[in-house]
Length: 281
Image 1 (cartoon, rainbow, N blue to C red):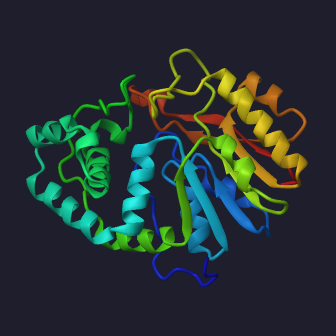
Image 2 (image 1 turned 180 degrees about the vertical axis):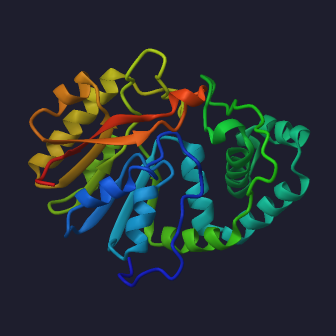
């Protein structure tokens, strides 16, 4: 990527469960000063990716996720921005509760890439609590959000984001595929669905297959192999005994962030989270 600072700072296009906006200052403090290629296998809203791009710190980047709907958004913004913007303006003009449910009912398989991307952005910005959630059939199932004037098409930011994405390799693939690309002195940031701190706080439905304790253990194996290859690895997760045990041989830093998703306002206070580094942070 061009090391020149981007004129307008790109911001995440989507509101995503576990988004790293609040944790960003803590993450930036632990990003290595020097690395070759950046990898983010759970890209989500991409807060850290976009911030590093804005600072001119990315020479090359691989971003990926197993959620095809999410990856479709980034591919369409990179490859056909004007059509996505045009569709979003149409959604914005026609927006209403009945229109929302008509768009939500559309099957992704019947839509083009740009139509799928615009649909996800529209639903994400107008659904309840800005939450992306899939049922076991892989269908988006969040109800209508009662916002007075939702921002559906932030055209200026979309243009900036598109320019950043043009310089990234974007793919739909599992986190283990990082082992195929990452090399010594690369930097990998893992932001998986968090290990639940209680039975009522478990949210992994950003994808129909969820993300359980076995997935967390598998991720630890990938993390360990990357670290063995002298790849610089950083991970964020909840502060639970299970996660502390998995990564007890690495540098663990406790930080605090507000809950992003909770149905009760008084349940959205700051909670402890962990940043785990394979190098001295």
